[in-house]
Structure formats: structure tokens, C-alpha cells
Length: 475
Ligand SMILES: *Cc1c(COP(=O)(O)O)cnc(C)c1O
Image 1 (cartoon, helix red, strand yellow):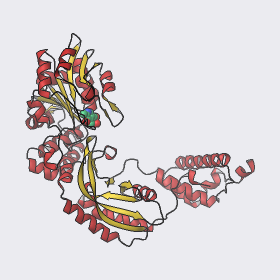
Image 2 (cartoon, helix red, strand yellow):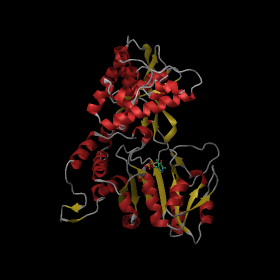
Image 3 (cartoon, protein in one colour):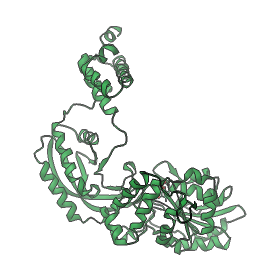
Image 4 (cartoon, rainbow, N blue to C red):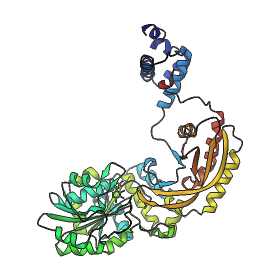
């Protein structure tokens, strides 16, 4: 074993190779040294745990592999992606893309100073939420509003404000987990509330709530089961009924509607998504939702409702820890302004535009791209095909949206390898792997990305097709 190790070049020897010298010049000496050391350690590990004899690559081959690996390592972690998954609110890809208006407002406000907490009318100190409160009230009918980092934060601060140390009544059918890290019972515990479960998984009746109310009760919470559906024999209690029960005992009724639809999504063929203004109309005291789901704005959590409760939230010390920055405020205000006219919103908010894109348009675009990349040497076949997109972001998981995709089958390389090469392209492209086919769903690709997509797909012809560069692949 020791003999084999002696054949591995030293760190200094590898650093002298032209490939790595070039990287030292453009990156940093220590980064390259660390890369070489890691590579050598991994190689020794591979050799000592191998069951077969391992051929040690030449110093020049090693330098090539290390250079490739460092090249990948040095890329920014956060990079633009062309979303070919067909999942419109893809949490892994940052949920809602912003409208042009929101981007312009963000850039303008981020570039300099802004009236974040100064009321320019009188020069006095103001509340930062003023930038969006009026718009939120106008669009939802609420008395007051406040904005925090996300809906998880909105839930925490709302509960901690009105029900700290008290019981909060929730139906067993609404104790949701979203995306693994959001579990309602845990969020409630962090807010200092005691969860009081009522009803069963499929049925909860008004009487279940009423009989659970006691000295310890601080609020009734309704949660929209965004990412699952219970079908069959079910019973839930409406917001209106819950408001009546809560108010009969002088308690606030909190409604976590989740995705925050400002308009009716039935027009896009998506049913059962609660509309925020309906909850206010039904009398909910506090309504919670995300800014980057169905609104199509920046990541934030929106709390609207009765002035009395919103003022209490504003005074909670947690508010300072959860407040949003000026860029979020600017993007949210610009997004909300688009909703003053529903047609404008449909044309300008990217997720609404994607949802209303006619199938014929998607088919045409898919066919055009297919035509342009036909004949690429890495392609076995490529064709336009019908498929289904999804809303994503934990919303409406059972409802599919008809769409058109490019179905790509590679030649001489696995579909996973092609998917991997597309992920490391610039810009990265992410599709859906389905058996031996990579699907790129045109519904989530912006029309102005079609040409870029063609270029990325054509460029695969010119790249080497070896295994991915990592020390593990040596031997
Ligand atoms: C998505 C969602 C949340 C979490 O919202 P974030 O903005 O991701 O923190 C909470 N409740 C419901 C009902 C949701 O749908």
C-alpha cells in the first residue's frame, strides 16, 4: 500500500502544472492548495478502501481533474436557472419570479436612500409597512396590514401576539407540514402557544370547537391544507362559522390561507384556492398568507385584519426580528399595484401569465425549438409532446395544468448525465426526468428564454462527454 502512495505526486509538484498555475492566477493560492490536498486525500482513501487494484492517473491527468473540479467549485452557488420543470411555484427554484415593475422598483429603491421609515409628508418618523399597507387594505378589504419575512414568520408573530401561553384550537385535519421544515405544531410551540387539537383527520364539527373553548383558550386557528386533500367523508367548519364561535367567546379567529390568492384562480382552471378578501368578508380577525406564492411577489409573509390586532403585532418585539427590508417592500408594493386592474395583473405578473398561456402557444414554441436542435450529435430523438404542469409551492397538488414539453432522448449517454450537464450549463437548465426521457416544460420557460435554451442545448455538442469532474471519479 505504502508503495502505491509513493507514486502519487506531491502537492507542490501538482501546483507546478500549467493547468493549476493558471487557476492560482485567477482565483487564490490557498483555494488551489486546499483543492489539491482534498483531491490527494480522497485518492488515498479510494486506494486504501478499494477491493481491486487501482491505476493511479498521471500527474497531468490529475491536474486536469483537479482543475475541472475547482472550476465547478468556484461557480456561484446561486445562479440563474431556466425552469423546465413545469412547476410554476418551484420552492427549490425560488418560487415566484418577479414582474418587470417589481424588478424596476427594487433596483431603484436598492440603489440609494429611500423613505423606508420617514413620512415625507411631514418629515416625521413613520412605519415601514406604510409603503404597502394602503394597497393591501384596498385589495383585500382589511382594516390594517403588516409584512414580515414569510408566512411562517407571520404565523409565529400572530400567535405569539394574541395567544402566548394560551391554547390555540386547531382541527386535526389542518395540522399541516409544508416542505419538511414547516410543521404547524412546531411553529405553534415556538410561538409559546399550546396546541389544542379538535375533531378528527377527516371530520371536524362546529361543536368540536365550541366544546374545546375554556379559560385557557387564546384563539381559534384555521389553516388551509395547501398541499394535500382529504376526500370522501369530510367535514370542515367554514371561516364564517369559526368567526361566530370565536366572537361569542371574545376570542380572535386567525385564518392562515397559505397561498394568498388575490384573485379567483378558477379562471385558470384551478379550483378551491381561498381568496384573501373572502376571508376578510367572512369576518376573520387576522388573515395570514405568503407574498411569493399566488401573488407572485417577493418572499414575505402578509398579515392583514382588524386594526386592534395588527397594532398589537407591530408592538411585539419579535417584529424587529421579522421585519422586511426596503427591497422587499418596493417589490411587494409594485406587485400589488398591478392587481389594481385584474387584466394588468394577468399580463404583467409572470406566474399569472404562465398560467394563462394557451396550449397552442406552448406547442408552437416546443416545435420550433425541436426543429432547431434536430441533428445535434448527442440527440437520439427530440419531439414536442403533451404533458401536465403543476402549480407547486405546496399549492393544489392534485390539480394538473395541460401543457407542451420537449421530450429529449440522448444518444450514447444516460438521461441523468444529460440532466446533470444541463444543470451545470450557463444558464442552468432544469427539466423533469421521466424514465429515459428528459422533459422540458414550455409553460415555465419564459418565451424570451427560448433562444437561450436552443444555444444551451446546441452547446452540449461541443463539450467533452467524460464523467463529472470530482476526485471520487478517479480510479
Ligand atoms: C406555504 C404555507 C405556509 C408557509 O409559508 P412560507 O411563506 O413558506 O413561510 C404556511 N401555511 C400555509 C397554509 C401555507 O400554504
